[in-house]
Image 1 (cartoon, rainbow, N blue to C red):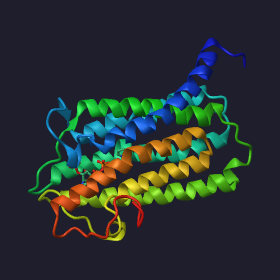
Image 2: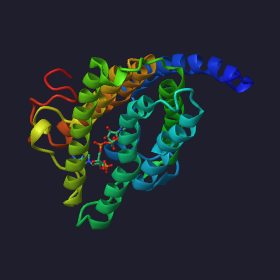
Image 3: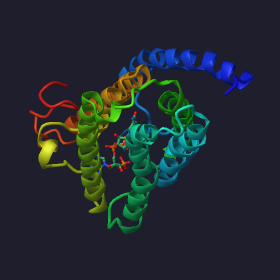
Image 4: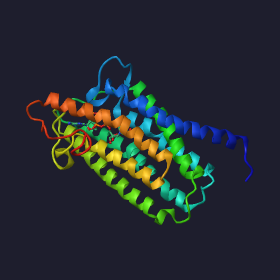
Length: 268
Ligand SMILES: NC(=O)c1ccc[n+]([C@@H]2O[C@H](COP(=O)([O-])OP(=O)(O)OC[C@H]3O[C@@H](n4cnc5c(N)ncnc54)[C@H](OP(=O)(O)O)[C@@H]3O)[C@@H](O)[C@H]2O)c1
């Protein structure tokens, strides 16, 4: 197939975008030491208009699905069955995050007994997440469907299957922990101390699971794009997990188990 001007634009855009992903890791982790994104437990006034969380999660995460599906047929590996196998973990995670997770939040909103509803999600934060998802989906989907050069046996190899195992472990932990938290709030009465399973050793098993997923993704794609996304996830969720942990220690000063860590069992 002959190269088009669009191809040459893309081939100069892609490495720049990839470099930017690594640049935004420190630009994310440093401000988050001082200031948390103002949603959920860390909601505060002064961040402009806000929207209902289920709608926000659906809208801001949606590029991960539709942009992947737009980019996939443009890639030179579109007809290689390994491409879909490689993209499946990414698509599965985001199918859950974009469609199932918001539906569960919506269901909880409708059934919550006596506790407060979740605070609104600031539009400006949702917009930033939407833009990040556009950017990151371009990097991940374009890598797998176009720029990568996996051999014909990649999907039966150690890196793909080892990474997939790490990814699935993270996915199960993430969904389990989010479900537990959503159910806890659904009982009414506001925030409570989560108990059981990994909650006994860390405050945020959902973030730990999410980080494991993207570590698995970095391994199974064996790519700078995958590694950059894992590092970004740590840069974003590490400080938030610390802030959640400190929030629990302050709110439940007498009862919160002091032995729990924030995000990584026995470490952090
Ligand atoms: N890849 C990334 O960079 C990234 C970034 C952000 C989020 N995420 C993922 O998105 C998902 C949601 O993130 P999040 O920041 O909203 O997580 P979160 O703060 O742990 O909250 C998850 C849900 O549980 C509720 N909840 C949390 N703690 C609770 C408690 N102690 N008692 C009762 N209810 C509680 C929250 O209600 P409220 O909303 O009312 O607090 C929310 O609906 C997670 O799986 C996370 O890994 C990924």
